[in-house]
Image (cartoon, rainbow, N blue to C red; front, side, top):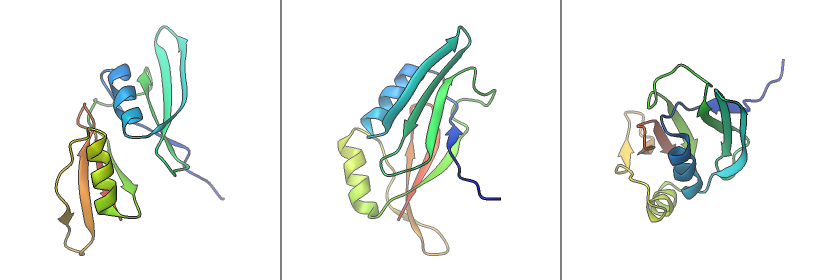
Length: 117
């Protein structure tokens, strides 16, 4: 069976604040729909990605800030500089035991993203 990951739910406490944060980082807004009083779905896609994130209300019972994901970039230093210019707070370039380098980024709720090259 072939399958493609379409979207990942990221739990947030304030949908509009998170929408603004991800848009400021260059994520494309694919949709923002309120289905009913308890369900709002905002779909955002990172630049160059075919997988989106979903934020909203009524999507998950997971605690805001509990997600962790990986964003692959071509050039870690350039991506870090670009994201900092957009107002993101990033950690330093770190190296794991395998030698791979990464930079940690958190959204306003504390959801963690690891940027890897």
